[in-house]
Image 1 (tube, one colour):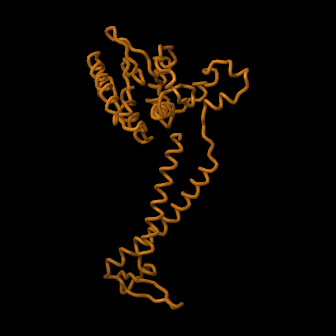
Image 2 (image 1 turned 90 degrees about the vertical axis):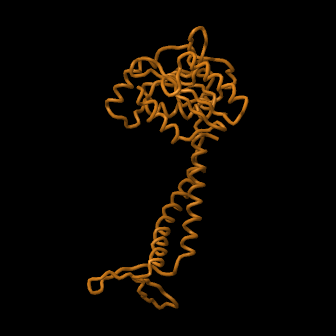
Image 3 (image 1 turned 60 degrees about the vertical axis):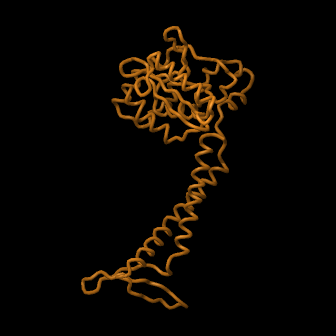
Length: 280
């Protein structure tokens, strides 16, 4: 399941919950609706109802509970129409949606293309987007673009685990790393993925490397299976080694802990806007 499909299913569940909620509010509300009129310069609230074809008006000016219930009913009625419309639109989208898989697109091309390097197919400059950033930030990001284009040594241990392909052809190891990479593309933030870093004779490969405002690099490492005791212990040791090497969490090292290996778009957006962008 792709990130989009997961988010789509989550949204549909949310809308179905709202449909059920608003339907119950309407079902349990008094019959009729609230109307207002002035009487001797005083506000009057009336319950307009109909029984056996006969319309009646009953004053409920002093009945706060009934006014509250009618207000909830009216809101639920209006909201239900919107929610049902959105749910129907999402269901239609889910039926028509074709998963975007760069790997499958590459495989569908004829043999002549399959013999070319992957980076031939992904033009970073043409597909650049800016996510509505202000001019000062764009200037900073453009300043880092040359750094982003530089070649670097990427860690290639366990290549069989690099099973996810970003929209620009980068192979990554997890859905969450894919989501992070795609969001970084949206914000036009250059990064290196698993760049090898040697400190005091030791090799490290943080998930994402960025060039900071002072031209010093800072890093983001994602730990996505902290519910696994062996994984957690191994990466706690890794963090200790990072610290000894001068990579300090909260300073030049951003650390994200997660369980079950799936982040949501809102979390990634917050990390980018609150942690990464201020360091650029």
